[in-house]
Length: 358
Image (cartoon, rainbow, N blue to C red; front, side, top):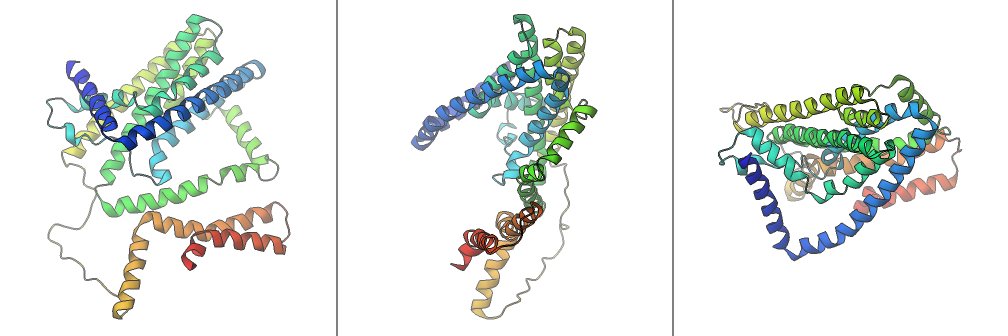
């Protein structure tokens, strides 16, 4: 326990030193904090009113919808760095702490606890309290519901840490990292079109998905949802179901931390082999398709663009974006008119191809 406290304190001290050591970071934090506070309070008010109204109007919908929301938020949070293309993983690299006489579970627990002081994590606390308050009517039920929601939140952080460790292992193979990053950027582009898909046809698809989730309760066995479901049962006074689900949530957190510990041990000991060329294999000769200095310069730019997953994703999205826009407009029943083609030409001109042409 002393080692764990010391590691958490060391992590917070390093973060504070990095923050106060640069004026631009202080300015960024000063601009970020008011925005986070205001956005968090507004989101907490929306969650409280929405869940409270749902509990009063359709109490049978609360469990399946909260389970679905908790699962979707947890999965997207775990994969958000990859889907956004900002980073392959945001999990902290533990290689700087390996020289400390502490086992891997202690190192991972210290990283998990230190994450609780991050501004983006602290901004979620009003949302959790608002959700717990919307489900209960008394102080004792509120404490139990807050504990259930907190367990679900901790599991989300632990699962995010485990997924980040998997990505750190994959990042040791540059080609695998580039391929997965490119595929994830494409997946993120397709996911950004989901609202258009759900709203097409007057919202028929959205109503069908909502009906399926409510009737089947498909996320009842999701570990991301156990904490939220325990909070719902606590608000309804069902202590037996609360204890069962809270125990399952605690076991899930411990299981994920243990799995992360085993995975981290294998990664940092070099036991994870992701494949690659043999140690004695000779390097392949580079084949140039274009001759001359100008051809070599052009081919160099094309190869660099194609090998960078972000630039490659920009090229594909710039090509498929106008086509998907045309597809959805035609699906909405609009006949091709000159204004539609002008809109597509404007979208293409303002995109990556128009910028490169200029």
